[in-house]
Structure formats: C-alpha cells, structure tokens
Image: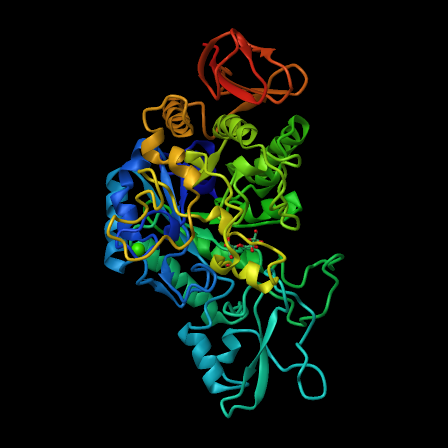
Length: 553
Ligand code: TEU
Ligand code: CA
C-alpha cells in the first residue's frame, strides 16, 4: 500500500501511459511489403519513419496472431504465433526492437473472450465429445426442444443472428451447441475454468517477455457469463447482466495487474470496455486493475458544445476517484471515420445506428476533424489515433458487397454494412491505387479497394503542405511534446462565449485551448500567442468549427 501511495503521489517516468499518444495500426491495411494485397509486418517496418515523423509515443497493433481471419484476426488460433500473412515471430521481435530504438512503445491486442474455432483447444473439444475436459474450456450445452434442436437460450450474437451454433458428435449425429457472442468462428472461452486463466496469464508473459509495453484487452467486460445462461430481453436486461460487466471479471484483471507490475518497467493494461454506466466503467480502473480504458463516450459524442462539455466533465469526474488518467479517442477500426461522421446532420455515433449512407458534407467534416484533434490532444490524459486519421481519410461507403469481409455484414444479411469502410488500406504515395500500399510488382490488388480521390490524401501529397491534415497532426504532436502541461495534469474551464469551449492546462493555466463550435467568428477569450490553429484565423477572430492553442505566458 505504501508503494502504491508513493506511485500515486507523482508521475514516474515509467508511467508513460498517463500521457501517451498511441497510434493504432490495423496491420492488414497499413502497408503490404510482399504484394499479396494485405498489409504485413514488413510493411510496418518499412514505414517506421512515418510514425517517428508523426511523433507518436506508442503503437497499438490490432491482432497479428495466427488466425483463419474470420473476424480480421479477432479469431485467434495461436496466441503465441504471428499469422503467416503478416510475417513471423522473429519479424515481430525485430519490429519491437526497431520501434523501441526510435522511442516508440508497443502495445499488443489480447483477445481473451473467445478464440478461433481453429484453435487446437476447440478442435479437441469437438473431437472428444460431450462431457470432456476439453469441452469445459468453452460453453457447450445441450439444446432445448425434444431433440435438442433449439439453442440453449435466446442470446443473440453481437454481430447478428443467434449466439449459439450446433455441433455434430464425433459419430456424426447432431450434438451440443456452443456459445459465441460474436461470429460462429469465435467460440467463447469458459473463464470459470482455471486452465483458461492460466493460459492467458502465460500469454501475457509471453508478449511482455518479448518487450511489449502493454496490452489492449479485447471485449474486456464480456468474459464472465451467468452459469444459468437464462433468457433475457436485450432491450431490458437484468442486473447483473448475463454476460456483460459481471463482478467476477475484476478478479481476472487483478491477477493480470500483478503480472504487469512484476516487470522492472511495469507493463500497461488498456481495456476495451464499452459500458454506458460511468461508475461501472471506472471500476475497471481501480489501482489494482487496468491502467486505462478507451473513452467511447467521447468517441460517440456529437460535435456539439454542450454535449462535448458534458462528456469531458463526466470523463474527468469518473476517472478522478480511481486516479486513472482519462483517454480520448475519435476513431478506431470498429466505427465510421470521424471525418465522415462530423460532416453529417447527426454527428454522433452509437452502436445501434451507424447511419451509413447519410448525406455528408466532406469539407465540413474535415474542418471539424481538424478542430477535434486539437481539442483531443489538449485534454488531460492519453490519446489514441487510428491509422489514416492523420491523413483525413473518410469512411469508404461504396465498397461492392462481394468485396465486403466484415462478419457483421454477412451475419445481418447486409442490413448492417459493417466496419470495412474504416479499414481500407492506407494511401502512401502516387496518383492511382494502390498508392504504394503494395509494391509496384504486386500480384494482388489491396484487399479492399481504395477510392481514387485519395490521391490528394497520400502521405506524399500532404508532406510539406502546411495546410494539410498530416502537417497539422505533426505540428500538434510536436507542440504537445514540447509542452509539459499537456497530457496528464491539471485542467480548468475558462469563461467563454456561448458555444465556445475554452480551457487551460497546467498549474498556472498558461496553456489554453479554445474550440469555436458556434456559427460565427469569435474573439479569443484570452490574450496570448497563438501556438497553433486548426485553420486560418480571420484577422484576430477564431472562425466557426476552428480550434486554437494559445500560450498566455
Ligand atoms: O469489439 C468488441 C465489440 O463489442 C464490437 O463488436 C463492437 O460492438 C462493434 O465492433 C462496434 O462497431 C472488439 C473488436 O474491437 C472488434 O473488432 C472485434 O470484432 C470484436 O471485439 C470481437 O473480437
Ligand atoms: Ca502482404
């Protein structure tokens, strides 16, 4: 306890996660080094310069493990191997070393709720049949109905359709059902079984021993299930919920925290925790659990002054009692890109309503996205950038149905277009697709088609253009690095005109961020030197949908 208090009293240099800017790499779509149309580790290693020039502190990799890729790698067949489509374990080790040499930390994705149906454990479970020890690693149950022909309960998959799939017995007769909260290729593990717990503790050590500085924990609140597996109405779920945020899950993260803390430089645990209840969310961030978690309330928030102010206040209020740094994120591989969201009449995001195809004003979206990144990077705590947002990439909405890969699209029979639109491969240089995503002699096209209009958004096209999104990101990150009051630390709202957000950072409040969400140009509410603005000022006035960083000295 004493050591803990000492740690809390000041920010140790090792507590990098309190202030880090973390860049999310979606390996399939970052850069393809061998021309098969799919991004890989060779591609990442060839573009470390981009990350260094951008000025990020860490990189989080979406799953790179051996996987049939039924859910883009979130169906893991071997947690200790790299998928051959991405490279080898030796390459991953090299990549970690090279990134560290450049002062960039590495976060890997751990997927504990489910594995792949190709994982040896699941193959064994099917082979051995009902009642076996291998089956107890998963959630197998007999079906309901006279002949077991109905699923064990009425739970629905998060990707659509039933959350159960029936198996065949080793002799070929119809057998038990197994639970999968996501796709059928992603059987849920049974976290009541100690072997599952031991396995994941060992997987954590495996990657920490190889230099990973932290883990992002997939679907972190879903692990534990009500053993009774009772039916429920998803519109009015009981409390505790049958599979979301059950109290028993916290013991898992306490044991993970002990492992993370056992390293000379403690490793960081970052939770993917989507929960509407702010206090239940904060419980994951208690001092002996996770270090941080994604702020999906901020990600989903509309581009409106009152809503933003409320979500910022709530975020800080909820994090303060557990002394965890807030995080700020605008986009990721699961949600429509924010340039597109911000160009629509309804600028919010929620899981139920994706608004794909809604009319979009691109230039308005870009303008707001520029202001939003200055807001994001000025807020206290750490921030996440999703690859491509630094280029101002928009959601690709016209992907032909035959090319769509997201199981969400297929499991809803296309009713939900899914997440492919934010996963389109990065444009690096050149005038036409694949924009050097793949080498010139590539044998395959990129796994999703890139819009021709991205020729203006390549890294090459934007580099050196002072008005580009990329140069704004580079300047903002350089400024953040040079400004010790940014990241974790004091924050205070300042008086400001209606529909304007203004706040100061640091003990003396000498750094100020102003965001004009009104429809008229305003005078800056403080005197000082403008360090950076998201768009040109209008004389001394800050135009609508524009943000500025000001040093008041
Ligand atoms: O997402 C968890 C999750 O709940 C998502 O399905 C979310 O509801 C949806 O993607 C929002 O659009 C994680 C990963 O981030 C996601 O990519 C995986 O598909 C999922 O887990 C299963 O592993
Ligand atoms: Ca490749």
